[in-house]
Image (tube, rainbow, N blue to C red; front, side, top):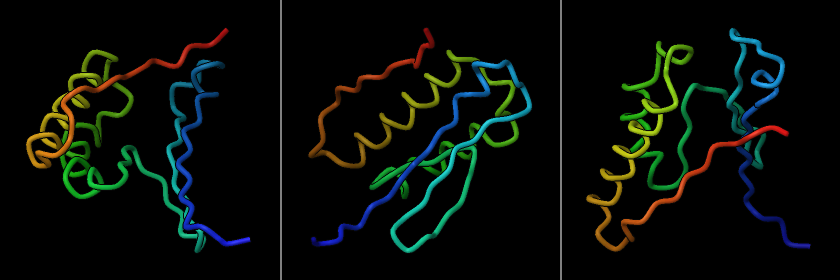
Length: 100
């Protein structure tokens, strides 16, 4: 079996289910075991272009951001990514995870 270069991003939503306001988790691990957690993560080209924009808008305000502000921040980052990479498409879909 040929090994691939896997990267895993993990967001823990259990804090939303049990109403813990002081806890959230967003983390990353790759094939070599490199791990870190941060308030924002981006992949691919977004790691170079969008990540600084996300850090500037989010860090220090993680627990006070509203859903509308978060969507606006992501829309801005996606617009910048589209303008920088003219070969991409300007259609983006998003979703909000819900619990049952």
